[in-house]
Image 1 (cartoon, helix red, strand yellow):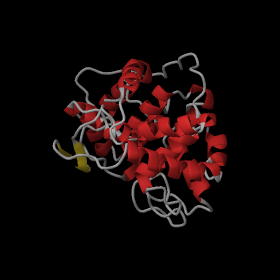
Image 2 (cartoon, one colour; image 1 turned 90 degrees about the horizontal axis):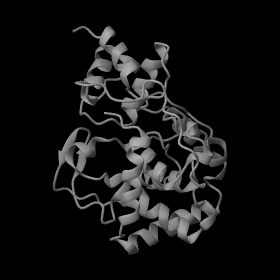
Image 3 (cartoon, helix red, strand yellow; image 1 turned 135 degrees about the vertical axis):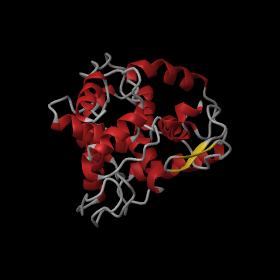
Length: 270
């Protein structure tokens, strides 16, 4: 199920404090590559317009598309064409920056606020962007931690397909972000701000896990694209939840809390 940031923040802070980089040469190489793009100003305007930190944007885009600026951060489709993968029907755009702003708006990243980003918040948004499904297997998400002591093995090798022995060969965003900041301190996150207020409907609902939410949204044909009912609360599920909330007068934050679950229970046949 969806997890609120304030609940997970102590976990992220503890993992950040104990983390050891295990693939230093690779981290150094990728951090250097992404810093080159940062120095060219390729992320600057998008960061200014959305509040998403350059280090988060750069490392996430490296995971999603190996920093191929012909592709959109939303799903890796060419941004100059109409997208065919979820989210479908986006574009064509006039530039990578336009596609990136659209993608980050879809996932609510432009609602975090530039002053609210910290290393822990970057971890949370990265895990939410990729999905919380690793928690069901007792594994710290490689999207964050691959290349550090916080991750050993276990990976979703395809949508809904878990392999406990597969090792993620990509680096997680965290070690690269931190190395980029150490090399270019001006990329550091803002000082920790006061906690964000919890949005309406945030929380859990007994007996209703993520798979139930996905199944209910599929029954209701929300967004018109079936979700994979894999119990992994990721970006596609969050977008569908937000669309459902918006259509029912709820806070469209993409968080399936008690108010949203109650409304789904009313709409979905028993």
